[in-house]
Length: 318
Image (tube, rainbow, N blue to C red; front, side, top):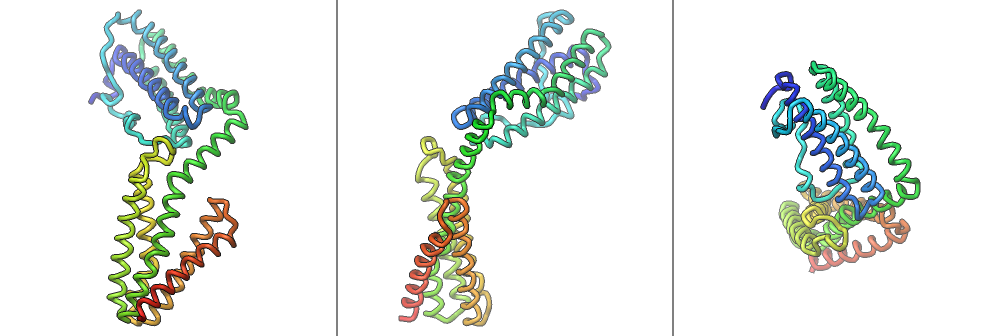
């Protein structure tokens, strides 16, 4: 790597040309990644990519006048001080807000680069172009805002926000809720069956941990293998599977941990209280994200939980 301070004017212009080309391709990548779900934002990034292409043409015209047609390949990763950017094609999904923030940081970095480059330039025409581009990059925030006002109208933004909310529900809330419900309810029967069969808190704890971890692994694989998300828009399988598996394990461990208390009846009372809290949390999530009336959600969840709970006690007491 080479220090920025050691770059010549020719190398600075070559680096600027490469940066503009790379930024334009990144904006094109953002546009393609967002086009299906967020067409208005995709159009905005198409416009920004066109702007970067125009900047590259301006730089290359000046470079050809000063240094000829040969353009050395100098990239930002060859120069110390630039931010490292992960490859766009490795991003499995694109979060709209993260993409917009990433674009803002790109413009900020570009403006700083052109300001510092203009300070180093000795040629008047090179310094003028670099200063002009620095001003343009600083104005890109207003450019993006202007494009947003023209393209991202109130209705378009509301539609994209609703799409983002729906994707969040499909990719995180639904698998997480399914896992939490399964972990909180399905592990009740083996846990309390073991508790009332053995009256041993340690053995009950081991059964509860085994049931929770086993259910988490099973639910995680089941969710991941249910579909690849290409048609349903539910996101990448490994993300959904991980969320579902972790929430399943968490749901089971919650009422298993009280059995670390040596006294059997105290541990059982605490475990029952934890179960009540878990069922209340599940009911609230269904009310908050699934538009289910809270009383209906609570009734449905509590009935299922009580039935499994009683089944475990009856089996363990037999």
